[in-house]
Every structure is written in structure tokens, then in C-alpha cells.
Image (cartoon, rainbow, N blue to C red; front, side, top):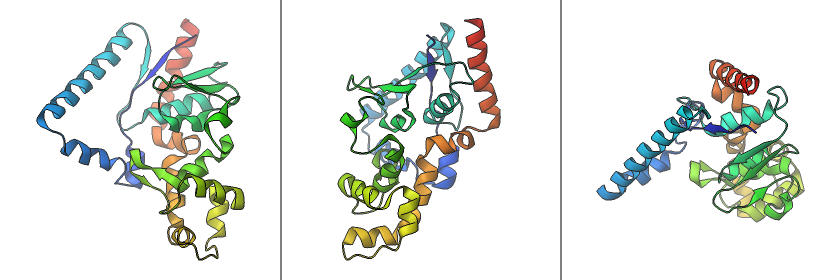
Length: 229
């Protein structure tokens, strides 16, 4: 087995599409007390040192300015066969990575100590794997400051998916007739769905988010490591 360590360098791609992407985190940092700010600074320094130490100790460590770890994970999982990888375990507490789960790709959370695989997917979610992107586009992502459709929570999102289909089917169905506030909200904010696809669909947009030069380096690094191993 090979361990690949992914670091986060922000996302130029997403900030160009939506300048407010993750802007809520800056607000959170601004509200920190001096002690909290110092503690966070120490954590970032420790994290940086850890990445460097892992790299020096022979672990393949991939981190690029303006590129999120999510996209690197997406690229590796999408190119799994070409890179000569049989099975991939993603070790992360980030549920966004469940977008990448398939028969050969699973996730283990270091926080919950639970696995997410094709075999136990329905223990975690009320929809199929391929529908996760639609669910995310409807409900948004508070952690990343990506707005969903106002008034549409998890239950209504699942209802809309069952009734109309994919995010694109839902968009094409708008304006939807109905007096409910959340239906009117959906009609008013339908364009948000398309922007959310560009912000959240790791499978489709990871290459664009990473950039050709970085992609080449990532592929070469992994293949070289496989050959040396």
C-alpha cells in the first residue's frame, strides 16, 4: 500500500467563480481573541511542520498553491486505473469526499471512526451516491459559505430529487408551480443551482480546478512512486 498525503492550498478556481467562497472563515478569524489567534497560528505552524516531516520521511506529499486537497483527491480517484491503483481509502473527516466513493474508493473518518463505502452508503444517506451532488447543490455548504436554496433543508431536498431528478432536471423544471415558500424560493434562486454545480462537483471540475501543469506533476509523482516501490 502507498500513503499519499494531501495538503490544502485554497482554491483560486472557486474564488473566481464565487468570491465569497469560504469568506465566512475570515470573519470567524477576525472574531478570535488574541489567545485564540495565537493558538491557531501555532496550529498552522505545527501543521506545516508535519507536512514537511512526512515529506522528508518518504511519504508522497502533494500540496499546491491555489489548489484544494478535495480536487487532488478527486483527480487521483478518477485516474485510479491509469495510475495503477486497485483500491483507494480516503482518510478524511470531510463528507464532501463521499462524492468520490465508488466500488474501489471508500472513506474512513478519523473523527467518527466510521467507514463510508458502497456497501454501507444507505446507513449514512437517504439517496444514491450519484445523487449526492444534487443534494449538496440544493442544501449548500455552510462550512464553505456556499448558499443552498433558502428554505430547502435535507428532507425537502430529498423530496425534490425524488420528484424531479438530478440538479439539472430540477433546474430545467423551474419555474415549478406551487404555493409553498420553498418552491417559490427555488424558482427565484434556480441559477444558484448551476453555480453550485461548478463549486461542488469535484468529479467534473477537479482538472479545471487543479490546472494542467499541476496535474502533470501529480500523475508523474504517483507513477514514479509506484515504479520505485
